[in-house]
Length: 148
Image 1: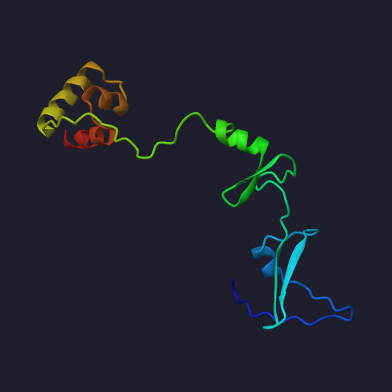
Image 2 (image 1 turned 90 degrees about the vertical axis):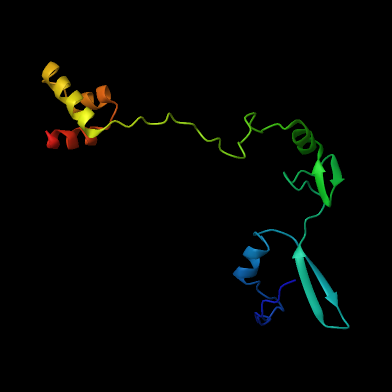
């Protein structure tokens, strides 16, 4: 239990207003039932949301069974047992490392010679095309052209 330290006065009809913070933390909505507990010796007054006899998952009141401290209806237990509404594809726990091919490094001089040859054969080609033919990036082709 959590002490919140909020103070509320009784109105003329001996009613109290439950603060918004408590209503949200207790998940209380308009029209929900509340149980009150009183200890006359200590003067303690407690309250909790009244759940009653309904399914924990769908709030159904028919064909209820008790399981691990909660009431579940027959439909929900059948769905849980049969994994209905569950994706058939399991979520991977660990991502597999995708193996990429190891790059082969060529000397700048070899790349410059290859680029010169390609530029003679295909003078109207773009840098992207030269890059694909050489197996390098377009920015590397730009660097090589500056070295020419």
